[in-house]
Each structure stands twice: as C-alpha cells, then as structure tokens.
Image (cartoon, rainbow, N blue to C red):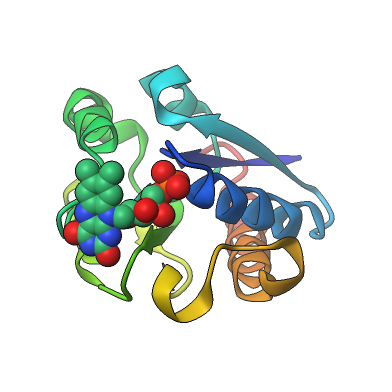
Length: 159
Ligand SMILES: Cc1cc2nc3c(=O)[nH]c(=O)nc-3n(C[C@H](O)[C@H](O)[C@H](O)COP(=O)(O)O)c2cc1C
C-alpha cells in the first residue's frame, strides 16, 4: 500500500475542501491510501514516511502560506530522504494568480521531488467556493499522483 500525504494549510476552509477532493482521487487508485494533514499538525517525519505528496496552500500575498514555507525550511535537513518522491501542488486565492502555486513548485528541485501532475489554482472570483461536485480536477490530480506513487513503488520497492 502506498501512502499519499496531502499536506496543506487552510484557515477559512477553502484549501481544506480542495485537499479532501485530492484525497478522494487518491483513494480511487488500488493500492493507494491518502493521509490528510494540516501543516501545523505535521512533522518532517510525515514527509519522510510518505510515498508521494500533494501540497496545498492559500495564496497569501502572491506566495504560499507562511506555515508551509516554515515547514519547507525545517524539512531542508532531511531533503535527501524526500528525493525522487512524486509531488503536486494545489492553491486557492481570491483571484486566479499562479504565483502561490509557483512559489511551491519552485521548491521541488531543491528537494529533488518529481512533479507528477500539473498544479491547480482555484480562483474564488472565477469559480466560487469549492463544493464537492465541482472538484473533479482536484480528484484527477489525486489520482494521477497516486498512480505515480504506485508505479514508483513497483519500480523501486525498497525506496
Ligand atoms: C493574509 C491574506 C493574504 C491574502 N492574499 C491574497 C493574494 O495576494 N491574492 C489572492 O488572490 N488572494 C489572497 N488572499 C485570499 C485567500 O487566498 C483566499 O481567501 C483563500 O481561499 C484562503 O484559503 P482558506 O479558506 O483555505 O484559508 C489572502 C488572504 C489572506 C488571509
């Protein structure tokens, strides 16, 4: 069984709704399970023990939430244990800005994480608050990420 960590920050619930949709997508894949963790309840051990990871953040001033950035800063010392893991990003903002998404994706090379799916920006002004029925893109992201994790585990069972 591969574990896909969905590591997110949410204050008002929008990113959390996106995170739950990603988890539903993960659970569709045979042999994969999702673990949802708000970043302020996560430790770097969670990042080490997972097989793939989806990062979710609100857009705060064109960047990821400070708590997620702090998590990356703390995880730097264990970066070698993260190398090669499939990863993906989803963000939510008032507008459809890509900058928060890119602020996370730009960190992938430093950790040698593999981008396994195109990132998703949920723009509230354009799409409204996320409701379960509208979240098919996010579910697909979860599914793609989980498939990449299963494939990697088959190829590299010891990793
Ligand atoms: C401190 C702060 C800064 C924000 N900055 C931006 C911004 O620069 N651009 C944007 O589109 N939305 C911005 N927003 C709106 C949030 O990204 C948006 O409300 C998001 O859905 C919050 O996610 P949550 O409901 O999961 O907490 C900001 C919100 C806060 C609280």
